[in-house]
Amino acid sequence: MPVAVAHPPSIPPVLKQQRELTSGQHEPVEELLQPYTAFPKQVTGPTVWTREELVGEKGEARWKYHWTPELVKELEESYESWKAKGETLPSISKETFPLTSNVREFLAKIRAAVVDGIGLALIKGLPVTEWPIEKTSAIYLAIGTSFGVTVSQNAKGHILGHVKDIGNDPTQIHKIRIYSTAARQFFHTDGSDLVGLLCLARAKEGGESDVVSAHHLWNVLQARRPDVAELLTKPNWYFDRKGEKSDGQNDWVKKAVYYYHDNKLISDYDPYFVKSIGRLVEAGLIPGHSPEQLEAIQVLEDIAQELALHMILEVGDIQFVADSHVFHARTAYVDYPPPHPRRHLLRLWLSTPTSEGGWKRPFPDSEARKRGGVQVNQNPETCPLDAE
Image (cartoon, rainbow, N blue to C red; front, side):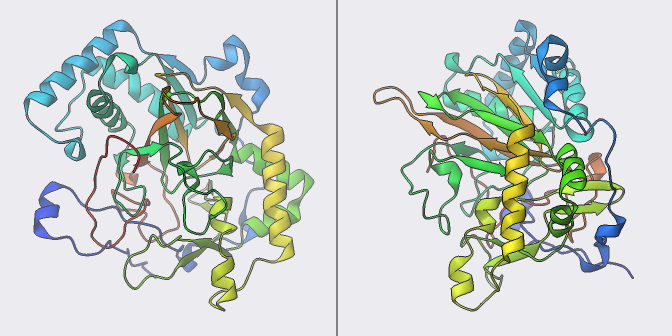
C-alpha cells in the first residue's frame, strides 16, 4: 500500500520564488513502524563507538578537524563574492554562495563521517573574533550547505538560531525552549537530521558539551534493560509542540524514541518535550506517561551520562552532530557579568535529503528536501543576527 507524503502548507508565490518551506514535525507512518522483535539486538559498524575509542591523539583524529589559513582565505573570498551580489542571509544556498573546490572537498570528508559514520565532528579555528557577525553568519550558513539544507528551528522561522540565555524561566518548560536559558540540557536529539553549533563566546562556568552514540547506548540497553529498550520503540510517547504549531494541528505529536527503518536504527527524542505535557494531561487531551515510561527516560539519561564523551567548544569551533544516531547534552552554565559577552552559539538545523544520501525515515515527509524542523503556518524563514 503506497504511503501518502505529507506536504507543508501551501506556499504563497512570492515565498515559493525564494525557497520552499520547512516540512515541520509529523507523527510516524503506522505502516512503516517495526515491532520491537524486528529491532537488532546489537548494532554494529562505524556508528557504534565508545568514549575510550575517541580520546587521545588517535581517537580525536576521528572527529577533530582544523581550518587551514588557506581554507579560511578561500572562505573569505567566497564571502566577498557573495556580498557583492547584494543577496540576503536567508537566500544562501550552494548556488548563491558557492564554495571553492578545496573547501568543498574538506567538508565532504567531514560530512561523510557525520552522516554515515561516528555522527559527530568538531572543526576548529574559524576566526570569528576577527569578523563582524554578518560575515560570520553568512560563512557559517554557507558551510552548512555542504552538510544539508537549512530548516526552521522555531515558530519565528529562524534558520540561523542563537543558543543564548535571554532570561527565560527554565522551569516554564511547557512554553519556552531550553536553549534560550542557562539551564542544563539533558541528552536529546533536535528536530532535524543534523545540528551544527558555532561558538562565538564561552560561559564563565559550564555550558560544556557531551555526546554519546545512540547505537552504543542501544546495545547497552539491550544488555542491561531490554524492557526499557522495548518501551522506547513503542510509538506511544507524547511530545509537546509547546505552542509551535500550525492551524489545525494538535498541541502534541505521538512518536517513539527509537525506530528501525531501512535497516537503520534511528533516534528521535528530547526529554523536555516529553516532560512538559502536564497541562495537556490535566485538560484530558492525552494520557500521561506511565511510571514505566518515566523510569525508562531516566535510565536512558543515566546510561548516556555514563557513556558520554565530554568536549569543550572554544570560540571559533563548529560542532556537527547527527541527530539520527547521536544524543547530545549540555551542562548548565553561568555567564560572565557585563560588560563581558554572554555565552553565545550560532545554531543550524539541517535536513539531509534522501536524494543527497540522507537516511530514510518512517515519517510522511521522508522524501522532502526540507524535512523536519519547526514550521508554523506559512511563516517565512529569517536569519536574525542575535537572539530574540
